[in-house]
Length: 201
Image (tube, rainbow, N blue to C red; front, top):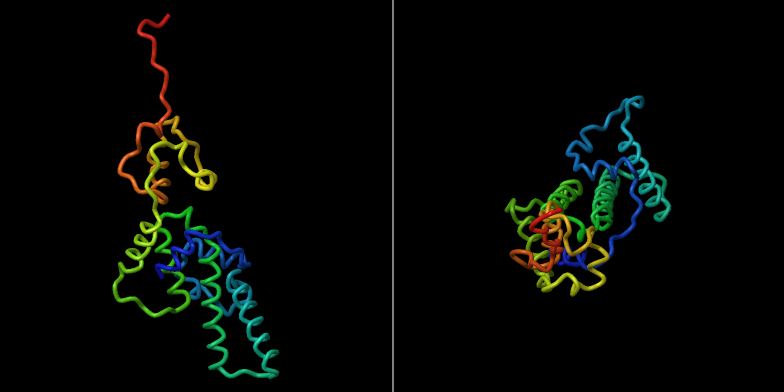
C-alpha cells in the first residue's frame, strides 16, 4: 500500500472512464451504495442503472471470449467481484494524491477497500499510518526562499509566493506541508509591507 501511495504522489493521475453517478457516490464515500438498490424500475437510482450496465457488459464480454451462452451463479459472482475491484482501482488511480491531504487519501482508500470487499485490516489505524509514512518519505526540506522552489512544484501550487495576505497563511502552510518538511515558514515567504509614515499627511 505504501508503494502505491508513493507512486500516486510522483505520477500523474489516470483518466479512466467512470459513470457520473457512480463517481459521485465514491466522491461522497456513500456507504449505502448497494443498500439503495431496488427492484422497482420507477425508482431505480442512476448509480444502480450504471452499475447494472457495467455488469451486463462484463458478463457479455466473458461469454463472448469463452464462446458460451449461459453462466452459472459462481461465475457471475466472480465477475461482479472483479468489477467492484476495477471500479475502486480506477477511481483511486484517477485521483490526484498530490492535491489531497493524507487523511482524505486514507479515508478514500478505506472506502475503496470496503467497496471491493478487500481483506479486512485488523489495525484500524494501519491505513492512516501507512499513508502518513508514504507522504513523509517523499517530503523535501523547504527551501530558504520561495524563489528556490523548483518550477514543477510552483506550477502545482494553488497560490502565489511570497504570501501577501497573512489571513491565507494557514491554508498555504497546509498545502506546503504536503510537499515539504518544516516547522514554521521563514520570513522570506512573506511579502514585506512598506512602513507606514510616522506623521501621515
